[in-house]
Amino acid sequence: MADSIETRLRAVGVTLPEAAAPAANYVPYVVHGRLLQTSGQLPIDAGKLAVTGKLGASVSLENGQVAARLCAINILAQAKAALDGDWRRVNRLLKLTVFVASDASFTEQHKVANGASDFLVDILGDKGRHSRSAVGVPALPLDAAVEIEALFEID
Image 1 (spheres, one colour):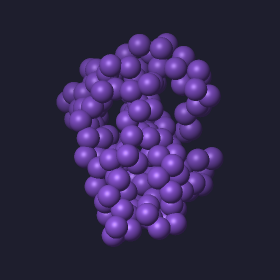
Image 2 (spheres, rainbow, N blue to C red):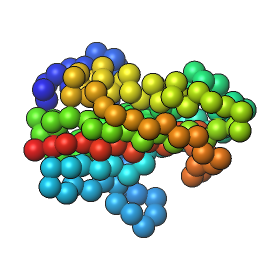
Image 3 (tube, one colour):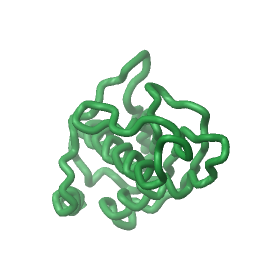
């Protein structure tokens, strides 16, 4: 599986960034027993917040999906760091919790979340099939459009 994850990432033109350091008083991930929980990841690309604003107002559904995909890339960067690069330790992605900064009339948070879900299933294969919550919120840190946290089962 380790080779296939790296191969799949290369095939879609993705190079994982270095795992981002925490921006406040928290850790970027926690390993407890056979669980790996990431802190929420923002749509950071090349060290900068790539998608800001609210879905249904200044951010389109398509850009929300791009933001969710970027969050997923950053989740994988955190998982890689937590596992010292050993993708064989990933048994399954259990759950994504997707927070979408939304205008009060926006009701397609689930479609935004597909930007992350589709990417993670493409990269992790069947081990990437997961449960999910997609929640609309009035604001996110730094005016990010999307924030996602993940829970993995690991060896």
